[in-house]
Image (cartoon, rainbow, N blue to C red; front, side, top):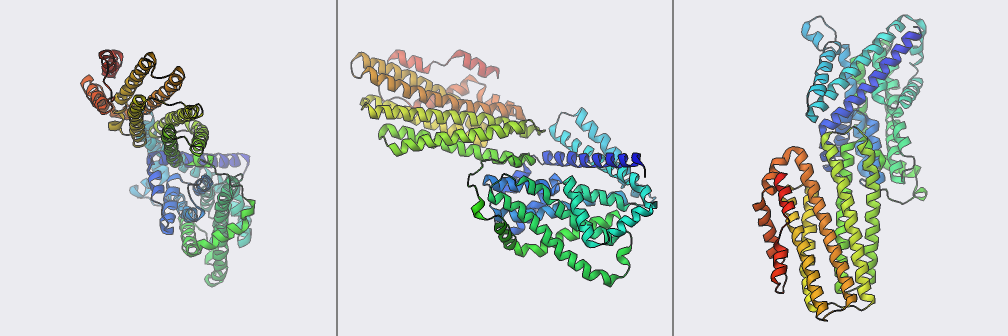
Length: 604
């Protein structure tokens, strides 16, 4: 075997690993949120957790990625260590799927249908179909399917290149002697762990072993310990990802390590006891299909044996990483979640809902301060505003990183929606803080409003809380039916603030209030109007993204007609009518809707 054969083998390995990643990415995009739903079904049942881990790993084709994601979940506070542990066990089962796909390369037979089952026969067909789907279709779902097909074709091509490159090794005595050395079980485990640790993929190392087995030089005695060692080597990725994480996140990677080490020790002992009973059987060559069977039997058996002892694994992890080493700071969202975009977006959406709750609570508290000022409540508003800022910083940075990744159309729209939302909620919390400062000024200066002004403000506050709740619900549920209610209500609030200013000017003219009162009254009205504006932005975001999601016709039917908008507008106007009689001029001004806005709605 010369240098060119080595280069060919390395090239095959590169294609193999690229194809595996391409196929995994395509499968995850095609799942299109199903990973998120799988995660939501996670309960305290360890077997459901194991099935979840197996399912996610089968989709993304990487047990390391699943484990790293679990580290990110625990580091972000989404999951507890006890919830992540069963998922990690399941990941070891899910990773066996790759070996079964690769075993197709070992199919023999001259029959036409048998030949068509061989990857060398159908991979080119899949590649052509994949290229057609990616090049000539506009549907993102079809493009994702194309990526899966091309990834699989590249993966199998890489395996064939590797196997062809190592075939000459079968005639080299040195190569056969190398695998005789691997018959030492301890050496085999170390080699399997080292190889997997270097390339950080047990699926890839299994593929390499399957390619080598096609030379006929790999025996059962050599392959079984190597397979066991590969499970230990795949822990390297999780251990590296735990660096810089909190204690429970680091414990997740330790659970993964202990599970694989203990499982390997148990089954290696059984292997050493059973081996003498089968004479020369273990010296026979192992083929590509048999490697897939051994890999599956070992991983499934390890999960069955170890599942009753999950608390022992957690205990070992806690003893290894004790509480005294912990930095208690909670991370809102961990970059490790970037390995699973659909799950990461689920976490981002959850945090955005938390932002909405914080902002809404701050607004309610700020309005309460105008009735009865309280220093503790004022401090809570300041704290909430700072917390919302922290959410926006964390989510904004994370989503910018996500936007640079290869995302499906649905994922891209969700990133855009959340980026819009966190900005609006942050501004709403800012206005809540402004209202708190206005309330403090009123309290410090012992300013009081007239009874008429208080009654008018009650109507405005009710309208603002209505639009805030409606916009938040529309945004959270991506509900166009709710979203179309926001803009008419926002126009009513604009009219209310204008009318309240006119009424206040009239009270000033008659000497029923002071100029100083006018300044704080104007600040209050301005912040209410701004909150309504940001609620309108949330609704527009939902409508625009829904239009992009091919619901444009529904939007036109609901909002595009002047009559429909006017009906919604007048309904809101009746609900939030001011208690005092209005002058003709004010009534006309309030009910006058800008023609430009109606024209824009009709053109949409």
